[in-house]
Length: 75
View 1 (cartoon, rainbow, N blue to C red):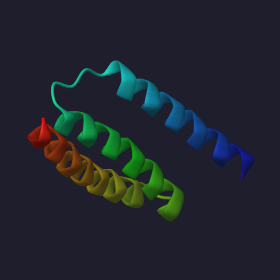
View 2: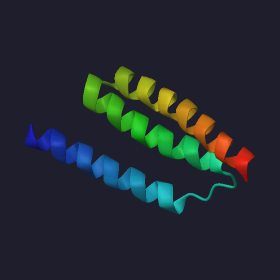
View 3: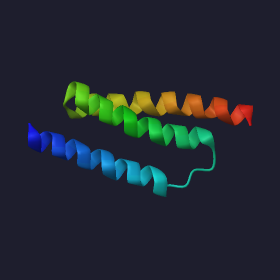
């Protein structure tokens, strides 16, 4: 249990680091990137397997892109 939690925390830390390093031109791209990371983490935490992680990443990317695109429209 502790080993699994440690692996999840490492993945989250590395993913957040990548979010800040990656340069995105628009809020839509940034939202998709952040949504993918959060969705993948949630999918792994809920489902605990690769399929759930990929589904979470896809759903997070779509949701993040939609939110970011709306922010771009407001600008």
